[in-house]
Image (tube, rainbow, N blue to C red; front, side):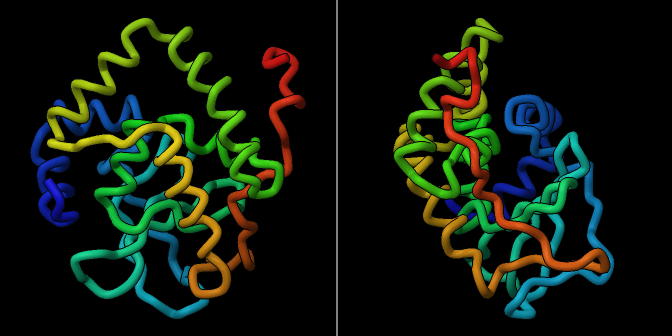
Length: 193
């Protein structure tokens, strides 16, 4: 499946896929909380397509077209592009469900630091749920996705977040949001030593 519109329709129609994405990827199409008065630097229109469990939201940016970048807006005042389109975003959620933590532990946007953090996060993810890898594979199959390797997904995520400024910098009534790259490095987490 390569069409973002068809993919979103399918997610909305199929409760099993909906539940899988909400559980594995924290991408819940039933949590649509558009930000009133919100916008991005370019003035492109935003369409909320889903939310996460913390009150954050996922937005398609721009006029309806085959490829609309996906903007993630956290409830803690960070925002940025995370994928080139919805299909790439869903691949990220399925293949790298700890993508937010990879950004938190990015050393302010260093891809090598993100990659090091991802190794620990993958280990912790699998240790926390013995069925996690199987659930990811089943969800990818159900969606008709060929999920790329963690290194490829990290590279795409890094590239998307790096393209945020200036056109996709998000602001609302509270002001301009911070970027998604966090300052921490893996050595900050004592369990990763």
